[in-house]
Amino acid sequence: MVKLQNRRKGLWAAIACYIIWGILPLYWKLLSGAGAYEILAHRIIWSLLFMIILLALFRMGGIFRDTVKDLISHRLRGALMIAASFLITANWCIFIWAVTHDHIVDSSFGYYINPLVNVFLGVLLFHERLSKLKWLSIIIALVGIIGMSVELGRLPLVSVSLAFTFALYGAAKKKLHINPFVSITLETLLVLPLALWYAGSLYLSGEGHFLVGNAAMNWLFIGAGIVTATPLVLFSSGANNLPLNVLGFCQYLSPSLSLLLGIFLYHEPFTTVQLAGFSTIWISLALFTISDFREQRHMAGK
Image (cartoon, rainbow, N blue to C red; front, side, top):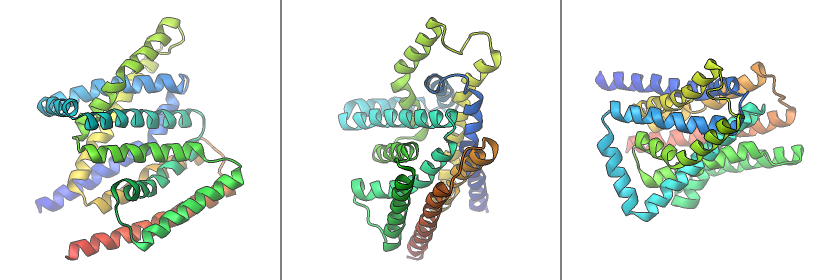
């Protein structure tokens, strides 16, 4: 009974997490009066502050100190931590830029192909073995991306950049095995000097949008920390109480919601070429999910 209750709790937490991530474009659109880099700088600053509060509330200071000592004493792990920090910063930057420059549809495409890029990197970096069905799903996705590139006359850079930065970030995190709360705290801490320098230079030059008389804008900047940390807390609960295949299926909520927002709320163009590209990815993901479900069921039967 307790296990069932925990699973329900985990499912609702995961759904809430992916819904928040899916509707985040609404939040960044409210800040679109500021530039993408200014929004990013404040997201880093206030996310760090909010994560420090969470570490204190959950009494995780000891874990944080032990992790820092471990990263300092092991250079390779320390280098991976720095790489993870810059990769997630790049991912945040691309996503915020995409939202504020009317490329929400492109960003959703990037997060649809992300699981397939994860699998590809798993083979490349961790020598993971794939079923024939999973290889087929990757080939179909690649055909879809190449087809879109040929028809559009360009590589869908926003989509591919989002997928690869997040996949590489995930690969670095897989190697590190660090508590997610500690990890995001360190990731924002490492790039804090750059964020403070940029936000500070904008303020001193009079070009910034923080503390210039618009109280609503100030609170939206501060709230960037909350909308970053809250889904992380929910994701942690979901990951601890749900099977990986259920959690993986839930992740498609985010790009689906973003896609709907981009098309129906912000009226971004959605051409037949894009529809064809998305269709190949959806077919690919369906095959991938079927294969993953079969593997999970086979492992459970052993």
